[in-house]
Image 1: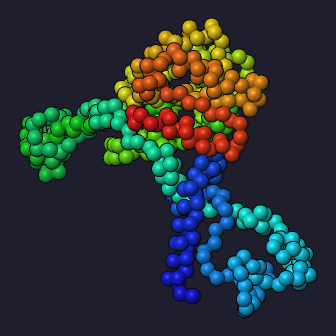
Image 2: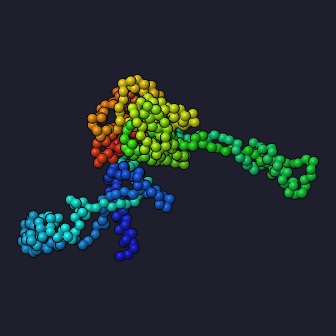
Image 3: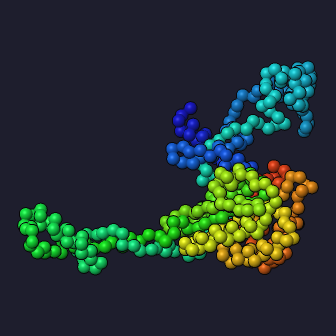
Length: 400
């Protein structure tokens, strides 16, 4: 077999694998963040996909079925009519007696082949997710980069604008000393070639283009962490496409709360357990504090995403309304995700809790896309990926 044929077969196999991943991208959302690795400076992800083979003639592991000549009708079985020859059932080769000896029954289960692990460029997986949720382009606020000007360097320009007298005098003194014409007490003549001027260094007023604030209450951490992982990468992709060379990154800040609130690292955000009751107004107060800090530094694009189980006391409702109103006015997107409880006796359901309160009290904001509310049932793991996809689509649908 020639080398070109091998390369062609590898290409065909890779296309089949990528097509399978693309068709079942929701199945890989939960596991992708655990399987990242770097290779030659690029980020890859290891995924498990159904076993793929290149279409070709291969040796059949089962005994061949001989086809006889002669008359026959549609639907007639082609092969031996003697079950003893097969060693078992004629129509079901899995029931043959020799099957357990010569062929591992674990390799074929109801017609499904074993899975295999493949390594895929992570950005290509992000492309599949972007295509699946039909991600719209984002239009950042103040997308033109603003700069602050500082006289922090010098330029050897023969110009009298922004002239630096001390450095020019030192340059003339060095020149005269090098020529041997300098005598102590003599006047130093500054020529045009000695002139140094202050160089204005233009620096972006902020180190990043946007800030994402994540607020986590008593929701299941592994579901919230999965959505946080994908929101980070999807928003970065949106800003990269929108700003191209002006893209400077996105800052992430993580907040946890119960009866008190605190800013934590990403590791603590997904691992720390806060015991006790939950006060929503405490979390929103901390979020407003962070928002004001970022606005004071000139940040214009701020996102806030909140996760909880939806349990809320009646006393809390009057406290959180003014805080949510201020948050909506201050951020690009405010998204709330209510995550159900596997224990149905403790779950407030899709039509209850904080989700229902927000939908009823902020009807106009929900309708205009200022407040985005979603629900993840968290009942069956098989459907969890598609529910997270729907939640991501709901948060990024506005293109803000």
